[in-house]
Amino acid sequence: MQKSNRNHTYLILLLILSTSHFLNDLMQSLIPASYPLLKAKYSLDFIQIGLISLTFQVAGASLQPIVGMITDKNAAPYSPVVGMIFTFSGLVSLAFAQNYQIILISVVLIGIGSSIFHPEATRMARYAAGNRQGLAQGIFQVGGQAGGSLGPICAAIILVPWGLSSLSIFAILALLAMILLVWIGSKQREISLEFSKNQEKMRNKTKLIVFSPLKISICLSILIFLIFTKNFYSESFRSFYTFYLIDHFGLSIQASQLMLFIFLFSAAIGVLIGGIIGDKIGRYWIIMISVLGPLPLTIILPYADLFWTGVLTILINLVMASAFASILIYAIDLLPNRIGLIGGLFYGLNFGLGGIAAGFLGVLTEKYGIENTYLICSFMPFAGLMVWFLPRMDNKLK
Image 1: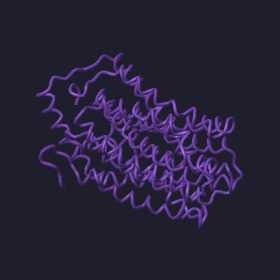
Image 2: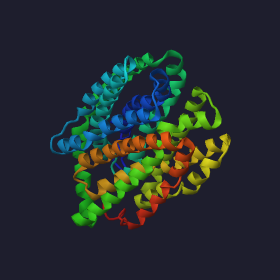
Image 3: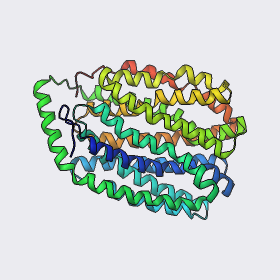
Image 4: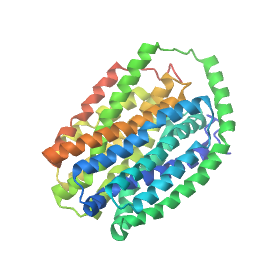
């Protein structure tokens, strides 16, 4: 397997892992991308749309910490394959759903699939990274971000003209992902052994500073708060941006899906750039920039015309995209022996808190209108000020 001799980074494995992440998140992204079609077909209101997001994301969140804890103690390199079986079942079920209840059951299956996929995939990205955790997480995350961005395009090109039943076509992607994940699982033992040896060498060369349980708890609480506020703002786009464009600017469903794709795809670029820069300037500053940095743009956005709405949303997501990967690496550095637990917990929170935000945003939009919702959300990046309370430990824990 090809690897960099300088930093022991397994590039081929990371690229294939990123591809599996791409396929996983592409299938997930079909859920919010299909909201306009579901709303029209089943006469749903915004509260019901928000409930679908809540159900999907809570299902995606609930098992991840549990899976992570189990795989920390007992290696399960093929568990992501099991996750893909759930995703496959959920997509087929959603494609032929006959009522709102079946829709909810379908998104639960897809959410469970994702909850099984992420903890072990995060572990493999950590193992394959060598000394370049930012680059590795950037490569891994760029697959997820790129896959997630394609949902709106698939909706515009396939779902809108062919109907919701065409979702079953995408179930084929789950089969392809299973093949890739079987190969990745077969490499875990080799990669993990080398990772352990490299970590031992680093511990012998570097003085390790271990924080107290109280300090770690405070840091993790701040990181969770930052994820919530970041997801709160991001979810307003993921679930309601198309409705905002249709309502505020009179765009068609296809045009609004294209705008959503541009917004989401910019994250794929931002997360890779953020990972590379994070290896150079440290995770602390990347978290600060990615959460607090978009604030001026988010405040201007509700008053922009269509052109500047497109420009601003790209810039916002470009800057904000690297937040999660940097927060995840920072959290793993706090508890380096609990990769599965931290990966599962933070991916779970990324889903669950986003789902809670989606449910709340649905109620907010139904009561006050979608324009006022975006006005309220524009102040969420102020939360980035909490980064000042985190220790700057990039050179202390590796």
